[in-house]
Length: 58
Length: 377
Image (tube, rainbow over all chains, first blue to last red; front, side, top):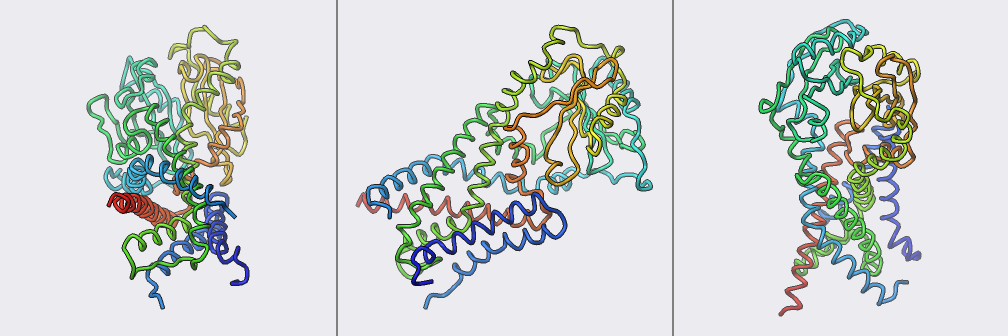
């Protein structure tokens, strides 16, 4: 990943954008299993924030 | 590669769009928090006694009887609309002294009576005028939608939403050059507090980017809904109703059965649920027709409402109205602003995203303030 500067910079943001859009639409357009899938997808950004805010730097 | 000159431009746009909208956006984020749980808070602050337990599948009581009861309670007033809940077994009848009064659109211009949808018993009579007071959620909604300023307030907040979206876009453009040499998510705590807040601003902003963008855009769309519906009314609806223009509305005695109108709409739209009926005479609908709103039964189609016009005297079908594309888009996207469409976990997540947005706004203000001080000294 270090060798691809574009991915190093934009990889995580892109993954998060895709997860959020998936989460927002899954709950809107689906029923049943799509709701838990939506909750899981939307939890990832929140966990990401918690991880980086709480993490100790080496 | 973004050139230095363009970075400067982006920075200029980012600073000014966010500075102008930040305080209003903070109000929106804060009033939005209780609105996410609006149904729960309303149910908790204004509890209804539980519904009578009846066997599942008990049919709906006749609408004519319900309307008759409502008119009997308030002789001399007109029934303006009724709402048939598809969530709870209740039917709400709205009354007013006249259509002119309804059009004034102030809190006292209409009042309601709640009926049990199966037994047609009166559950609650909201009473007229002074007896009705605003609920907490109602006040929050007024503040959130229009800052108590009606349509001008809606348009103003819509414009603030536009600035917010511009701030998001320019923020993303700045993220690249800012983070080029840094790892994703870095929060430098041991250096200056300005640096720590800058890192937090960048982290929370980029992580919640898509949510802020979607909620911002759908917020703008919601603020534009009044003029968009008005536009439709003044063009398509007006053209459709032109043949009936100027004819007097049927008096309550001349009015055909509302139950018949309901049945007509049901037959015309199999598989759809009628959720509300506007009575003949409404200045925003038709003087000659019952206007019924029906919605579909799948997750997507349940967001799409189809208007049906039924002759107010004969109860015969007059027209199935097709909504224009811009209103259909608005209706489908609308829930994306509220986060109330995926159960309690989605509401909790919505709250967390909202709080993250508040942190982005406040850290942004702080960064501007700190930098300002830095140049000043």
